[in-house]
Length: 193
Image 1 (cartoon, rainbow, N blue to C red):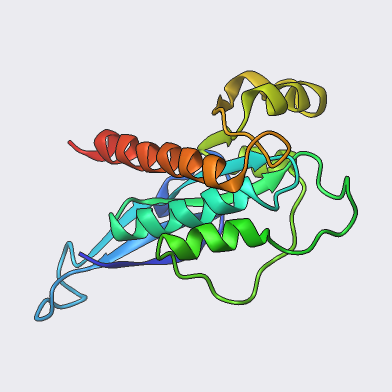
Image 2 (image 1 turned 90 degrees about the vertical axis):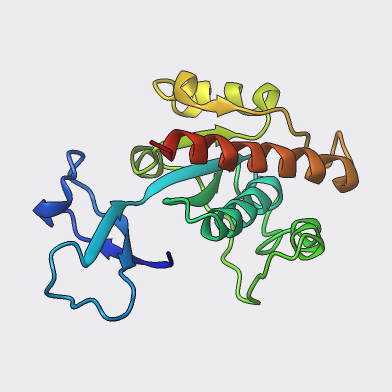
């Protein structure tokens, strides 16, 4: 069953949004022949969000975001990914997205449009809007979280994927790929009745 995403305002009471913020829902359309007026024609499922964190929001977190969204869509998993950085701009304007991330996604057949946003710094709003937050390297990101968002540091799930200073893309991206695929499988298993 294929669905499409709809962004609902926070005051759309029928979704049941206790956090009082806007959220994305996944709407599934029933097979042709059914009428939109029939009970059960519209099936709505709250879309959850995973937020991937890395230092610059340029390489690892962006790769994880795109790969996760591609896998989730192919699996009808009601989750979407976004990504942020904990030290965006530390090295100046480095561009929109790492060529290593783009090459790794292309190698895996993940379609990427040519328009890429610039890296974004993590905010409290981002944390609050996410159902799951993942720091891609615990040794690097736990200390940053403790410094910048101490109340959130222990709520983050941490992985162990090195940046370019410690690992070549040929080593880091397969490790990240494996973690993302395992996460999708885990979330699919949690979704099953």
